[in-house]
Length: 531
Image (cartoon, rainbow, N blue to C red; front, side, top):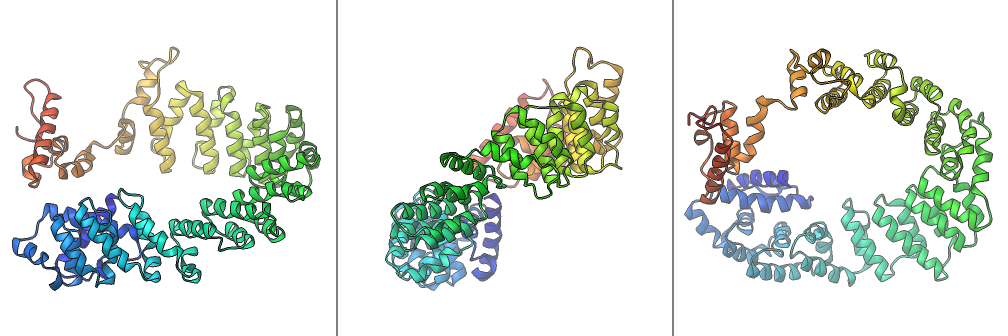
């Protein structure tokens, strides 16, 4: 939201010199209008217009659109209220009328609601303003516009609402489908296809539940179930699988026992058990053929989800399967069944598939101290693939003590940014132990800041030369700590850098300076300030 406000301040600067509203605001983005409102108010707060300009804003009938936009967002409520009457004749300003319906000043709010009620008589206008109205409804006093939109759209012809169902704004699609479900506008088959097509989970659940409710009431179910079962989203597929039992088609659930999504597999197992089947036996039969190239990774995962520790004997041979997804699911299944053979899983760290190495690493983490640290340290070299280096460092980091510190220190200057940052965090968080005290010679050498600036920054937890830059936003707000921080960074005394601010912000700044001064040594001064 802060970025939106800054964009609004930039737009305000351009509007004051006569730029067109459509050139400074993305009219299709509701956040841009909210940012414009906040940005113009902030702009006037810091750089108020001359009295002659303010007097001109009090007569909105003679203002062009760009100046009228400034008046609609002016900090003075009387100016905002006067501008609302003229804004009714400018369709480009109607989004700002929507914003004013949630204004904190009651007269402005009531006047804006009168204008909006007249504007929303046109259905196309209501559809166009829907994204902003719904976003504003999340804010205080924004419910009125949402209720008005609902009232207008409920009595509108349904074909006029078609753009809302394909809107890129998910809030608009949710509102449209809720309205359609309440009014009974769509058949169960249409709702099922919408659930299968829409990427938003809320719309998926809403449409799927409505479609299945129609089935319970005796509607046609063939097209509905087929659409739900063929959906890409696992939530929709699971709803369709669960509905198979009510529809008397529980035998169809068996083919979903190996689904790629765990929630779908769980629903399929429930339905299969309800019709007298044994999911565990089905999984065992599938996994008993380790050389079958058609074996599904979902079947391997399903065996671990409902099997017993004895079923691990079926998973071990799958570690040599040609499909890396099957190998990864087999390793994850062994971990889920709490079956571990360190020697056999250690060999999987050489697997070419990153997913297999990741699962093997997770399984070996509790046994990291039993691994050979020298072999793992060799894998930190640049010649190894990145997933192998990450796995080696995770295991070395889990060893703790001097092994962890050596591994992390060796990566402080690594070209891989993620590994370098992870190693720096590991060094900073290292804790001495009884057998590896902090004062030992090797520990002192490893913890000592190196010659490279990057190494020193990672060890210290930040770049001290950036203190002044990071503190600048606080200085704009009048923070005394930030002012002293800038002075300490060599950027001049706070009084030379800070711009004039209103009295209450000056008082906060001086409060901050007093708190800062308490942190200085007795008789000390703010560094770099000359105080």
